[in-house]
Structure formats: structure tokens, C-alpha cells
Image (cartoon, rainbow, N blue to C red; front, side):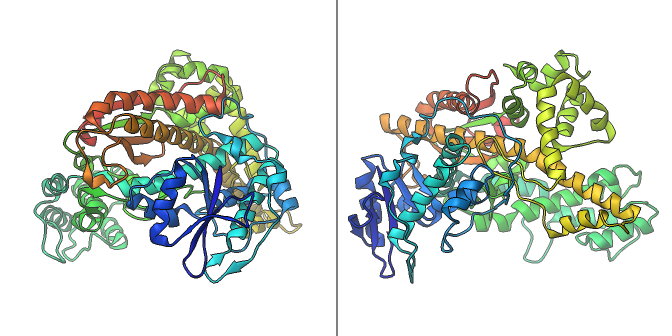
Length: 593
């Protein structure tokens, strides 16, 4: 069952079946929507709406969760620029002007090197209802009213998107991508609604230990002032403002240090008594600015940290945040992430995710064998490719990010000989980028194409009067874009694996909670999550589940099983595995202990 949700200018919310858009299944006002959705949710529909961000928070605040949806905004952005759907989209028409753009949109209208065909089961997302018979589709209706698109217009856009997928060159992969992206939109809303358990007192103790007592308004913490005084003395600069990078750099140079930046790596190349206090000051300044007392006041409320996640917020499909810095929580504040009484945290980190995804995409059996059931970098060493784990890591990162000089440049050719399939895939992606062409992930998200300035540089180098400098600049900018596309196919496909992992786990967690609600509630998690295990944190290849302690073992098993299932979903029976570093703890800091 598919249900389209829309609201008219008078604030009346209507629900329709897109196969019969002229007859409403139900109508209500905004306040009544959660009750109506709860009633229909028993039939396990796929909800269709313009933007999950506008609907899910209202439902969750009322304790209502939906199993699945189709987010027209996010899915429309993917289809508008996917090379897999380019021909179909041109034939079936563009997105309507009323449909908001996605958070980060790539563009591309040329066919890129094909990715590994999608393999494996699709039951995880029950995708059959994403491809209804053409006879069920309504005629396009693009009318809008003062509040936005009309309900028939929303239904027509949904049918257009389905038609584009059906007519694409990779319909099965795109169906999975759209289902996963929409599930990600639900997860992002739920992460904010439930919040990450946070102990304010623990955080404040960390700040006092690192920085000293909370300073008066407008003053620096005591420890920073002490370090600043040492630096000013050592550099003979009594009025130096250490928060000004320009002033600090000049003071260092006046003291005879030939530095070109204030980066820690460059500073440590020099021997001077001001170096260590400068580095220490900068570290404390980052802590104060990113997670200091002002951050606590803004972001911690009622024992929870509720960041604004942005699914698909980068070109590769990786998530971003629009506030709170959830993707950059430093280790020294993780002690504040503490489970509620009677609850535990299940923390899981996918080891070497991107190289494993590369092995699966390229069907490189040798690389998959090096990773099977163990540390991938250790497997590369055991295979005799390089001598140490550190060298293996440097080589692999160099291969995925296009390093050609230094230690990476020396080691990457060894990987190319040992794992020709994997290296051929990223090399091909780099060549496409160097030509200004888009590349596409395993499931169908395409990279942006370089802008007008890039093309002007390339065009200038081909003119009869081009200089050697023009040609060098063209080669350099082409290689830079090639390094981006080289990594795009891997990082983007790894983001797709992570979405499938989280979406599958979300379903399993709901089943665990429904079977046996917790004896002890976590009221700060809100009405939808106070008695069931739920996701509370996500960082690219790492997630945290907050669970009643009696369900901790079942949740840990579900985390492992859904990681395995995500690999099978994307790579079928190709023997690449995705082992996890998994911990059941009371506080996030215990994972690093």
C-alpha cells in the first residue's frame, strides 16, 4: 500500500492512494495527523511525502513511528543527476519546480564507467512496491496552490520518479538506493528526536580538568591564559593575540622560525620553547570553541544531545550535520555519552569499510581474501605486498585518494600488482574525472561535474597560444578532479553500505522492542523510544544504539547480522565480509579505554 500525504493552503492534510488520486483515504488537520498515520501504519504502507523533515518530527513527538517512506526531495535529487537515470529522466521530464533540491547535488549527463551489478536479496527493504504497474500510474498534474504543490501534483511526481527508475539502466540498484536514502531520512529525524544520552556534569568535569574553572564572560579559561603568557614570553611578543593565525605566524617568524603555517605538523618540525605551548593552546582553543560551556548550553537539554543530521549532505552521499558538530566529537568529551540507568550503549565500528567496499565493487578476490575475517592491513602484510601494517594503510589510502608522491607513491604500485581489479576500478574513475566526466557509485549516485572555471583552464591549455604554464595548470586541475572521482566511487558506495546497514538495523531494533518493551523507561528519549532499543548516533562507519540492558545481547547480535546482510545485499555471494569492532558499554569513552 502506498499513501501520499499533502497539505492544502487551508492547513487541511489529506491522504490518498496514488492509484486513485481523486478520492481521499482520510483528511485531518495538522494536529490530527499522528493519529491518522498511526491508524494506517497498521497496514504497513510506504508513505510518500515531499520532505521527511517536515513530517517525521511531528509524528515522533506524538510517539508515532513509520516503517518506511519515499522522500521525494532526496530521491528526486538522486534521479536528476544519476548517470543511470539520465536518459529516462530526459524522456520522462525533469523534476517539477516546486520540489526542493537535495542537500548536496551532483550533476552528470554522460555515461560513466559501469559499477558492479547489484546482487543479493532485496527483502530488507521490500522493494516490490517501488515498481507498480504502469497502468496504476496517474496522469501528470503539476498544479500548485499557495501552500505548495497540490496533492495530485505530489502523487504525479512520485509516479514520475518510479517511471524514471523503471526506465533507467539499473532499476534494481536505484530502487534500493532510493529506499535506503528515504530510510536514512527517517533515521536522521529519529536520531534527533531520541537524542544521544549526555551527562552534562561529566562533560563539565572534563572541561574543568582540561581548561580550568569556567571563566567569567569574555575571559579565556585559566589554562589557556597560562599557556598564552608562556608563548608571549618565549616569542617576546607581550601583546600577541594567539587566536589570530596571522599574528601568531608573524610572531613565530620574527622569532626566527621559518614556518609557513601554524599547523601542528609543521610546528613540530622546529625546536623552540614556544612550540609545545602553542600547540597545547590551539588544542584547548578547539575544545573550548567546539565543545565548551557555550556548546553545552546550546546543545544539551534534558540529558540529550540532539544534532541536526543531513542525510546525503555531501556529494558522495555521506551524511553531514547543520549544527552541533556530531560528526566531530573529540575523544576527551566522549565520557559524557553515558547510558541511562538500566540501559547500555552498543557501539559498533565497521573496520576498514572503504577498502572492503572497493574489494566488493571490483570483485577483486585477492583483496577480499586479505580482508576475510581479519584486519585488512594485516592481511596485506601477510600476503607479502608490504612489510608493515603502517605501510599497508598508507598504500591503501594513497590508492583511494590518488597519492603519487612520498611514501604512498612508493607503495601504491605494489598494491596495483597484488590487487589489479581494485586498482583498475579507481584508476578508471580517476581517468573519467580527469576528462571532466561524472562517475557513479554502486547503486547509482553520480558525482558532480567540474564547474566553468575548470573547463576554462582545460580549454586555455588547448589553444594555439597556450604557454607551458597553462598546460601545467590544466594537467594539475585535471589530476585534482581525478583524485576526487577516484575516491567518490568508493566513499559513495561505502555510504550506501552504511545506509543499508542502518536501515536493516532500524527494522530489527523495532522488532526487538515490540517483542518485549523495557521494564525501565528512558523518558528523555521521547515517547517513541522510551522503552525500546534505538539508534542514537551515526558517524560514516560507526553507530551507537541505546538499549535496555536486558536487550543488549540481542541488539549486539542484530548489529552484527545486519552488517553481514548489508554486504550480501550489495555484493551477493562475492566473499567480502564486513567485521565490526563491537562493544557493550555504559559510556562511549569505555570503547577507547
